[in-house]
Amino acid sequence: LAAVLFSACRREDVMNTSDPAFETPLSARLVSEFFGTFMLTLTFGLNVVMKSVATPFSAGAALICMVYSLGDVSGAHFNPAVTLAVVLSGRGQCSVGRGLAYCAVQLLAGIVAGMLFAEVQFYGPWKNEDFSLHPKNGFSWLAVFVAELAFTFLLAFVVLAVATTRSPHCASKQNFHFGLAIGVCVVAGGFAVGAISGASSNPAVAWSLATAEALKPGHHSDPSGIFQDCLAFCLFELVGAVLAAAVFGLTHASEFRKPGALLV
Image 1: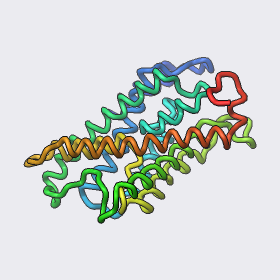
Image 2: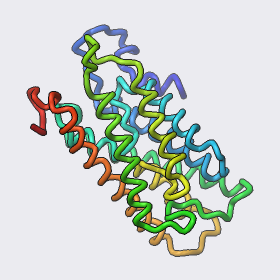
Image 3: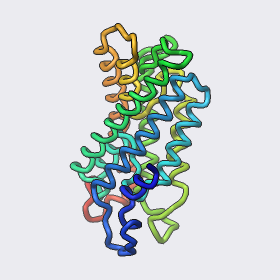
Image 4: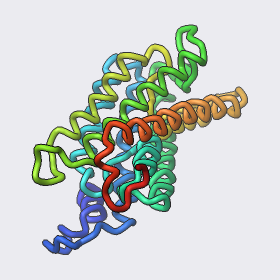
C-alpha cells in the first residue's frame, strides 16, 4: 500500500524525470491531501476514543510526518480551514477550483477515518462515551468560539508564514523548519484549549468525530444535533482561517507586491 501511494503521489519519481518544469497533476495532489488528512484525523480520533492524555503530541507528530512527506506534492494543507486561508492569500498559491477539490477530499478523508475509529471505540473500553465535539466541562459556546478561532487562526497563519513564503535569508523557497512549526501548533492548541473545545482546529477532524458518533452502534439519539454542533465548530474554524489570511496580508505585505497577488 505504501508503494502504491508513493507512486500515486510522486509521478516524477516513478517516471524518473528531473524536468524542473514538471508540475504535479491534480490527481496526485488530491491523493496527497486525502492520505495526509486521513492519517491526521485517524490519529486524532483514535487518541480521543481511547482517552489518551498524549493526544496533542500524537496528532502533532502525525501532522509533522505528513507535512514533511507530502508538503512538496500538494502543499500539505490537510485541513479545509488551512486551504481556505491559502486560497484567500492569493499569490497563485492555490486556485479556487483546486481549493474546493482539496476541501472535498479532506472532508471525505475525515468521514472515512471517523467510520474506522467508530469501530475501534465499539470494541474498546469506552464504547458508550460521547466523543463528539461540544463545549467541555461546563464551558459556554462563546468560550468554544474563542478557543477554536484562536488556534485555527494560529495554525493557518503559521502555514501561510512558513510554507507559502520565501525566507528573507534563504536563496530558495526550501526550508526545513516548516513542518515542525506547523505541527507544534496542534500540540499548543491541544494543551491550551483541549479541555474547552476539544481543540480540533480542523473541519475534517470535526466531521470525523461527528461521523463516528452518528454511526456508533447502539446510538439512539437524533444525529442532527451532532452535525449541528459539528457545523458550528467548522464555522468557528473557518472564521479563524479568514482572519489568518487578513492578518497575513498585513504582516507580509511584500508578498503581495508580486504579480498574481490577491491582496494589496
